[in-house]
Image (tube, rainbow, N blue to C red):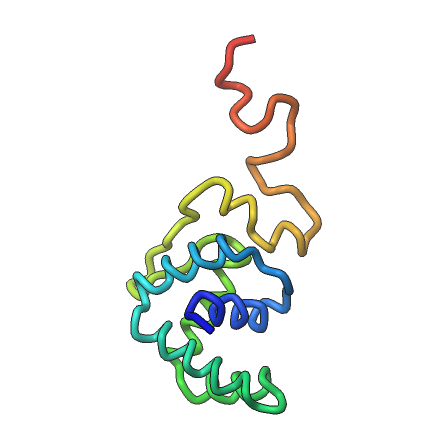
Length: 132
């Protein structure tokens, strides 16, 4: 398994959603790795160890309870999947990097709504910028 495969599997465990899109997963992994390089690597190692346990979610939960830095990266992983953004260590937001990532946020599936400011309209997003 690669970091990309393990990140997607970890993300599925953390979010409770199966079949997360691999390309999106890799984009999110790269964004988090750029901001939390050491802690994301440690989180992936913790996931690998937990995955071998009889109850992976319970094992990972115990590890996260004992390590605030890992818990932080786990929360930011959940955040990026649901909202396409996360909070950096300095408290600033790392916003969605593309409109497509924003629209792909799991939050829209969970609340059964369309993405705000990206409602399906005749002509698609940005239709107002085109002259009739």
